[in-house]
Image (cartoon, rainbow, N blue to C red; front, top):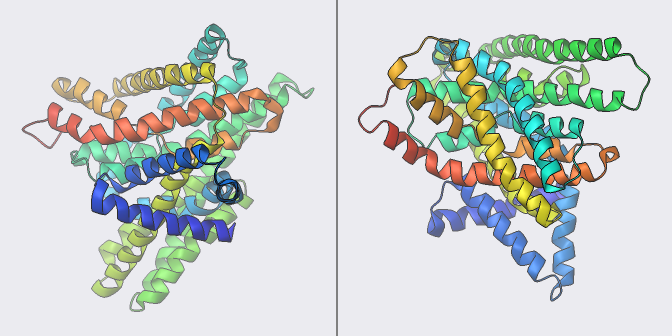
Length: 421
């Protein structure tokens, strides 16, 4: 895996240079599109250069997208995203974030699962009910990595930015827990457990993963902050401690069956805000932020390149393609409903309601986490795994390219003379 990762960083750097000099798209989108183009060229040339084709296929397979993201890069990316989020601005949107990242995910999972199951039946694709809800669970959370990377260029107001960023940071962990709960239902179909025991198991999973992740993240966040504070005059050690916390904290959380993503978000929020506010060591603070910004940019590049190269793993099928297009519409519809229902429970300016809902709907980007979860599906579900990965990739590609490139224009169109919602 190390060799593959090294080559991916090399390709990512070259593609970043090409995008910066000539294409001039947001780097994450440019890298993904170049990755897709590179994959198409590889596939078309495999008969002429079989050795080259096999070499890069082995890199993609050896890189193991799911393990590389979920067990490696995710801890850094979530921590890096969280340390730059203003916790006081986020606190002002706490009700919105809580509702969107919990109730919103559950509503979206139910709607997507039910509609995609019906659509698959009509199109003639074999996708049973529980796998359909697995797709609903993995596609419903907005991806914090994709959202934060693209929102930096969109120019949205702080209020809306906090709603979208906060939701994406937390609903990622909630989505993984929902996904794991539905997997329990899938396993229950092959066991003799009672419905009551299955329900208790899912309830305990939610409690252990979600609550445990939040509490553990707070614990390591405060411990990490006080360790960093005690050596704040040593910039290198501060950075080393923060990296160790991100890597070790995520691993230990996973070993304890807590949500690693939620733990990293909470720890990053605590350390990023308390250290940046309380530290009088300007040079140390600057080094800390610059190192994490570089790590974030580097790993983001690798991730979006991998998303592009993952096109190689698709099993092309006409019916899958049609279902993928339908899935895009279903995901957008479910996003709209899962935003407007919780949003109706909040106090807001009536004249901005639909504008905010529209931006939240279009700004709910999907990314690498959805693909990683799709690749993590057990082989026991058979053809459903192939179907789910195809329609997930289709929805993610549309989300990042079309929604990501147009969200800035949508902001200007809806709010031509004002920046605050």
